[in-house]
Each structure stands twice: as C-alpha cells, then as structure tokens.
Image: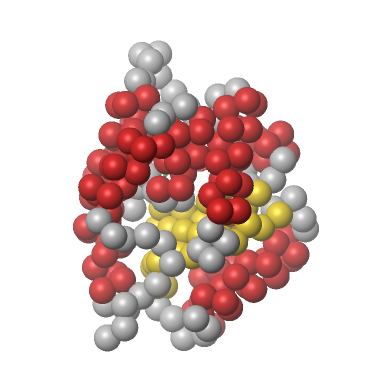
Length: 208
Ligand code: T5A
C-alpha cells in the first residue's frame, strides 16, 4: 500500500486555517483520497490535555523551555498514536499547525534558539517532515481582528503585535527558502481566491 501524504496548514492568528480545512479535505476526498484531519497541539486525548494546559491563560509565568517541551511532548504522542499509523495505511493526513508553528512562535515569537528546536524536531520526528505546508499569510493586525471576533483570547493571543510580526517573518522566511515544500498564500484575499491558490498547491502535490 502507498504511504499517505502529510499536509500541514500554518499561519498567524485568525489567518483562516480552520475555515480552509474543510475545503482542503473536500478537495482531496473528491479526488479519491482518504483524509484524516487533525491538529497541534492536540490530536489525541493526552495531547489535547496538554493543549488545554498550553493555551489557558494563567498567572504563573510559563518558561519558554517548559512551553517548548510541552509542545514536543504533545507532538510525540500525536505522531505515534495518530499521524504515523494513518500515513502507513495510506491515509492522507491534514494537520492544523505542526513544527513550523514551533519555529515561528517559540523560535521567532519567544526568541528560542532555532538550533534547539531543530534538535528536538530530529529527536521526536526522526526523518518525518510534511510533504506540503500551506502557509496562510496576512497582515498581523487584520488576522488578530478576525480572531478576536470569534472567541476570547487564549494565552498566545494576548501577546504583543511585535511578537506576531516576528512569528509572521519566520513563516515567510521558511516559505521563501524552500518553495518546493511550502506554498505561501495571501490570506487577505477573498476566500474564493485563497481557495483557488490552495487548490493549485494541492494539485501540484497530487500530481507529483
Ligand atoms: N502554537 C501551536 C505554538 O506556539 N507552537 C506550536 O508548535 C503549535 C503547534 C494554537 C496556538 O498554539 C500556538 C499557536 C497558536 O496560538 P490555534 O487554535 O491552532 O491555536 O491557532 P489560532 O491561530 O488561534 O487559530 P484560529 O482558530 O484563531 O485561527 P484560524 O483557524 O487561522 O482562523 P479561522 O479559520 O477561525 O478564521 C478566523 C475568522 O476569519 C474569517 C473566518 O470566517 C473567521 O471568522 N475568515 C475570513 N474572512 C474574510 N476573508 C477571508 N479570506 C477569510 N478567511 C477566514
């Protein structure tokens, strides 16, 4: 049986990841693929518990190292329990955020050494990397305004504008350095145009 393909969707707050997940799933299913939609942090009961701990606003400061290790702990569980078994049975996995979020938020946002993140990535993932990463890119203020209309801020959404500008810059840098793996999509466009660009990127992967 062929191995499934691993697709991740990324971007700053309120960029439209959740909105576009259903579209991507339908696009793939219409072309005969079995699709599993999942998310990080989360995707298993234990990893979802870690997500709740990570996202809940709290008085006690969370050290950057604690945050980083919690994210990779959730990822280790998610990969072994959900992602790898699905890929092995030929299912395509569509994941809302993955390790590029760690480079962007913990690396760019918190200022964590990217080399330390790379070491943890190798340790937890081995050679597993996404086949395609869709990076939705939007003006930070516009994304935060979209997100604020939808729900109360989580622990990350309380960060400064400068934090999210650094997050965005890391995403754009990753996408620009490796265009064969990343598709950088202007998420400030009307939804139909965003989805046309997403479909183009999916078609390239499906035909490769
Ligand atoms: N995190 C995560 C890390 O720090 N490190 C890591 O390694 C990982 C994996 C997770 C948090 O965890 C952090 C980053 C995050 O802060 P999350 O819920 O996954 O949180 O991420 P959020 O960005 O908070 O997700 P949101 O649900 O807020 O944003 P979405 O899913 O990007 O946005 P969405 O689809 O809900 O859209 C927001 C609004 O915009 C509208 C939608 O209708 C919706 O109302 N919209 C559009 N409006 C106009 N035009 C368009 N093109 C539109 N697209 C969407």
